[in-house]
Each structure stands twice: as C-alpha cells, then as structure tokens.
Image 1 (cartoon, rainbow, N blue to C red):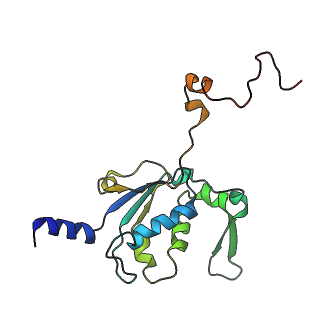
Image 2: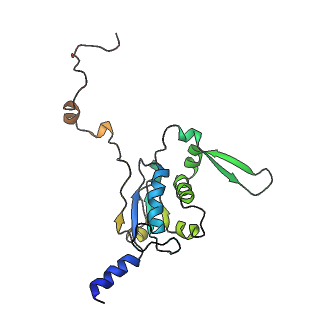
Image 3: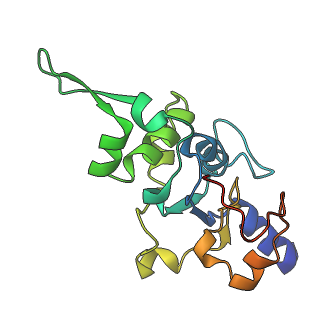
Length: 179
C-alpha cells in the first residue's frame, strides 16, 4: 500500500475534531447536524454498529436562539428519585442556571435511545462562551457550518451603509410620523 493510501485510510478511520459556533442557532436543528458527526454518518465507512464518530466542540452555547415563545413554553423534566421528587423547569430558568444544558439535552435526545449514546456524548464538548481551553482547541481540525446566518446588529453598520440602504418610502425631511 502506498503512503498516500495509508494517509487517506488514516484520515477515514481517525477521529477528527469539529468546531461548531452555536451563536444565534436553534439548538434542536443544530443537534441533528452535530449527531451526524458524533455518530460518523458523514464518513464513507459509516455503520450503525461501528464506533467511527468524531469529536464536536460547541462554543457560544449561551447565545443560542429558541424559536418563538420557546423560552417560556418549553419545559424540562427532572426527577430526584425520591417520592414526589418530580420537577418541571422552564427553558429560560435552565439556561440561566447552566448555559450548556439546553444544547446538551437537545443532542442527547437527537442521538436516540441506542447503547452507543453515552459513548457518543463523551465526544461532545460544550462551552458557554468562546473561551475554549488550549488543550482542546489544539485538536480542532475542521469547522461545522452554521445552519443560519448570524444577523448583524444595526450599530455595527457604518453610517454610510445606513444612509445608502434602499428606502421603501422616501419621506420628506420635515415630515413627522406621529402627528
């Protein structure tokens, strides 16, 4: 076997490290893309029983975006194991307590109930901001593409761009909307 073939084979079977920026991303849509990488479904050698998945480092999980009124409507269930130990917590309360928990639970449920779920979850590394330890960051080889574009804030545009932006109505300068 040639050395080029060996390198290609190593790249196929070796574990890669992917970086995913969760800023302004829906965690439940992002979880499906992350699960493909964790399970190895993006590789040509994928088999449901084979453990060929890669590592995924998720950053900025504090800045996720839930659609609609999900912050008030989504409820997370937890049971302590004791009698009357059931509790339901709103998504925004869970996010205040632990910013990585919503993303972790989304990926956990997207993995399905297979025996390989816990091994795949160990290859998921979630950070609430962009401060990632150097020991993890040095392993990252590739980056997963964000599913939706991060919007640009109005105060980040230059005054010239705002002035040249096409207007729907060309109001006179002395016109006041609230008459």
